[in-house]
Image (cartoon, rainbow, N blue to C red; front, side, top):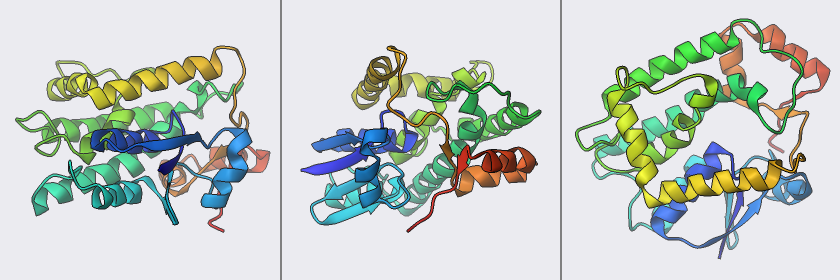
Length: 258
């Protein structure tokens, strides 16, 4: 039996869960970002990041590497499209979702997290910069959705990578209007009808109620772990002073690999 060091709300863990469900693979799940599980997570990933997949004596970290391993280990149904060009395009969109889109959404959504009750406000211009850049990416994504209604010809890792991020945009003030993003809006609705996606959405909503409605939280509520892409986006857009203030206050943590 495979073990997934998981988290209900991580877009990277959600991607892996949907791939496992798409392939019909059974696994045990550990909510590894819960404070009580920190020691177990650190033993399989020194950076204490999810997801991590353990298959017997093999440990695989990084969601893209986990997806590639699962496609090798359980090749049917394939999560990557057939043909060199569509496969390259699917990998590209997975990378865009994992690095660029994730970084922006993470950096501008901190003040909406149920785990962190912040009393401060975002630095001036942060939300506007993030929304502007996200709209540029969404325009490119709109143009990439093909006649089949998917990003790379058929349902693939590109769609599973993008969906957790796209589905979180509304809370950030970004609405998919039919006049601007008709294909993307149809794609979002089509994805929500798929059994794998619907089950994951139901799981996310159910666990949100279970973990937060009582007023408490099983997760870290003060410090935020920052990794490269998220820091890079902040620095590239001129928010270095705010980030360094987070570091000096002790709220920002940069993980080590060992």
